[in-house]
Image 1 (cartoon, rainbow, N blue to C red):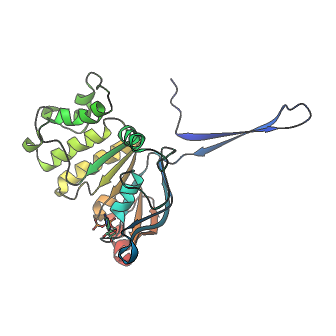
Image 2: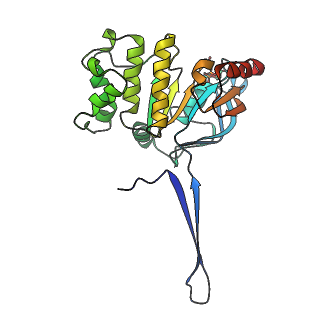
Image 3: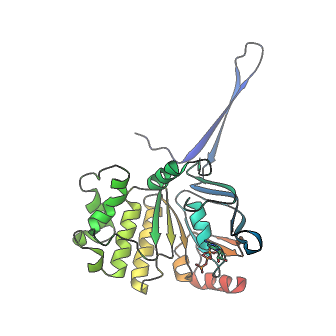
Length: 271
Ligand SMILES: Nc1ncnc2c1ncn2[C@@H]1O[C@H](COP(=O)(O)OP(=O)(O)OP(=O)(O)O)[C@@H](O)[C@H]1O
């Protein structure tokens, strides 16, 4: 079957006299964003204790793009990620994943959408300690009520270079290997978007490079969208775009690949 690109096709039909026949058909092709935030505000607390963690943020993340989100501590990076992923409710504004607006969804539908279209990678790996690497990778499929196709889990593990570790539990793997299992798990359902919160924060330089390479492969080979929070300019240099946050707002949107030094310079200038 022909795989259509993720585009939104808007067809406008205009009725016109005298016979009510179709006068014109206008077809507009417009690229749909994998993730969209429109005027998103997130406040915590009430009264004088109110903290505005995100302040009217509007941003879109294109299909098959890799974005790094940077900014000083407390600037709203994790809040942005959690609101975009539907893990946190927004105070104002709208969030769309793959064209579906999260706001009106009930919790069950929201969970299903997260399960089917979103992958997560966290700094702390968050693997299930009692399960093997293969069982961890298969978990999101099982939670979605699906069974992995024959060889699917092995293929995912091979893709992250861990074909020979399928039967190992997380405690028997290094930090870098655990994070690679977490990436295989995040990608198992072939989600539209992968949100990564400091995925290299707990890793050494060589394990970090491998994790970032795998996220890059998800974008370049599988056309997935990656949004990654990081403090590390070296990690951000793997992205196509760097968003800088300050006080809950986007203060710079750097497009195109940039070197780590350039990113570090921008970051220093903004903080
Ligand atoms: N559940 C919460 N209750 C109250 N305030 C919160 C909550 N979560 C975040 N905040 C506040 O919102 C602001 C943004 O927090 P957030 O965690 O998004 O920042 P961050 O840029 O990810 O920081 P860091 O780099 O330190 O992880 C901070 O001032 C934080 O204290």
